Length: 92
Figure (tube, rainbow, N blue to C red):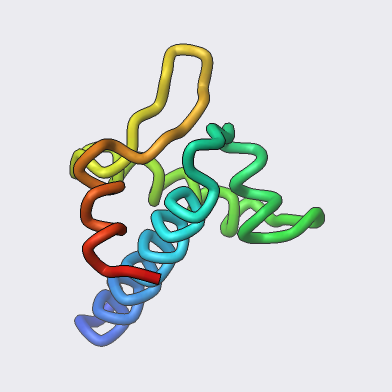
């Protein structure tokens, strides 16, 4: 079954909200580095379903691809210098 344009806009909106929340959380925790599991628990709670985990992992990939997050070889996630600077410009 194909999604309608309205459903796509809703999914895009949900993805954007999750990316925003995830980036804000990583900026709030900075300079502490966290891994994916810690971010999943932090954003979705202890009893997380596949869809919630998948959404967070997708958000990490999108933000990494956009140059706002960096994931080290050992799986730790940090904001990039650009993301930190942008966060500082936005203020508290």
